[in-house]
Length: 387
Image 1 (cartoon, rainbow, N blue to C red):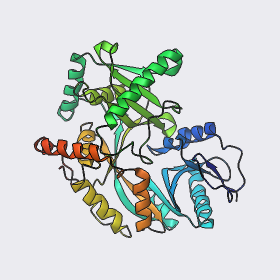
Image 2 (image 1 turned 30 degrees about the horizontal axis):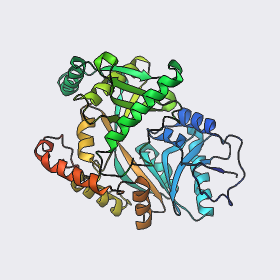
Image 3 (image 1 turned 90 degrees about the vertical axis):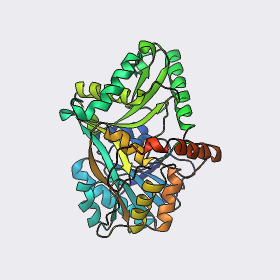
């Protein structure tokens, strides 16, 4: 057997890395992630700072980040269906030879037997909001709120534009990306963390877009400033698109994000896409024990989603995503041999969820206190309390 690890992060000690395979460059990573990614976060394998473990035949890969000896895999097993079991076995052997602890995140329910056969502990992580475009039409009373946001945006002059580099001059592209970066920075300034969340969330990087698509809502009939923007990540060979990053100005037109998302969903459906993912709601319906799961993770998710929404607003996420009337699919954390305190802490550090900025955290707490009555009307889900 031969597996190659390609380091895309500084400081990786490659002394024990096995012989390389032929397809180990950025273009090959992008192609495999696009063609064979089955998870909404599979395309994050193309981000800078990821470790890539290739299968011996070069047809599949696993995307990792690490903290010490704890290696975390995002995006699932990115390989042709008939090669996924072999890829998992090879990655396990690679990790065991180095004394590493492996964890896979956002694993679908149908994949649990494969991981359990290999000795992984499975714990529910949350639920993914999925829109099946064949049946989605935004009609009827369940979509009344979404239609109101759309109509309000239209009355206030919002129009959707797609930012496509080949259609712009270099100067125009740089100007647009600078405006989007400014919008992103202003949006993140309202979060309690000191920077963007990492690993399970993508980062906005205009220099590494690949086949990502960027849509923006502009004011004044499409000629004014950018009110918000959306980055869509491809998966399922382009049949699926993940709404993975969305940002808006603090003073954006009300409802700009749902306005933008509804328009983009319609555009993708016209193009023949079959699925849109609104990504994970962490902690959703996670309080019920599963055979052999991790009580540490289960209790942490349940407590966090109920009492620590000022850190990561799971209640607000569920409320917003539920307005699009998706179906929710369970997603799991699979750890081998099991989740430990060290493994859990490694994830916390990798995510950056507790890398607080003291001033921003204080402002977040104050803002939540002043709007607590309005938040009492958030949509509720069992085992996911709205604060």
